[in-house]
Image (cartoon, rainbow, N blue to C red):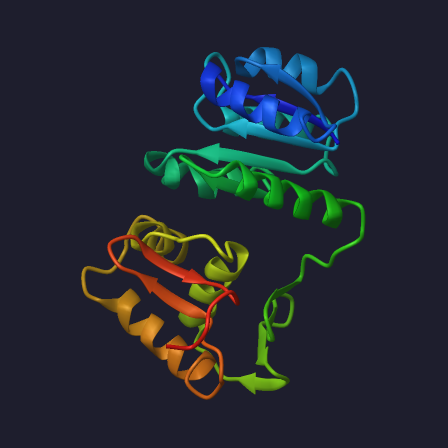
Length: 228
């Protein structure tokens, strides 16, 4: 892959460059938004990685510029700090395809980039999310597990979509609440109640549980564990 990385933290950039170049990829690094814009428009890229907080031109504005200039097919992944989460919604509005929250494992970044590139090349449908035998068709809002159609509330589907788009990664309560309710998260235990309802539908009737609570961290959906 030919990767453009726009990241002002030298240590983070160096780790990413060394990791991907060791696998035979080409990574060009830009330390700020304006240099990233210049290098991003100079040649074709398979994927662009942008930090949200960049000097001179923010990652959100840079993403917007790329899309305005006609770079509509190249996948763009944003790197965000937890404090940047309110900006993430704006990044999606401006054309970002995915995001990873710092600190992150390089293996996770590699997996997300690989999925974006496969979808961009037509090898994977982006409208159907799958975790094990659970399927969520985003276009029709249909949720099935083991071919059994599940009746899930609109809020429950938003939470499920967030978890499935981030499968195998622990999502914090604050992160999920922001994705579902924006800047006005509920003051009660609404998320906990909705997670419980999802478990009753998605996990309880089946042999293998998919949704887990990571105490002190948040929630995760994965097919890599047995039902407890």
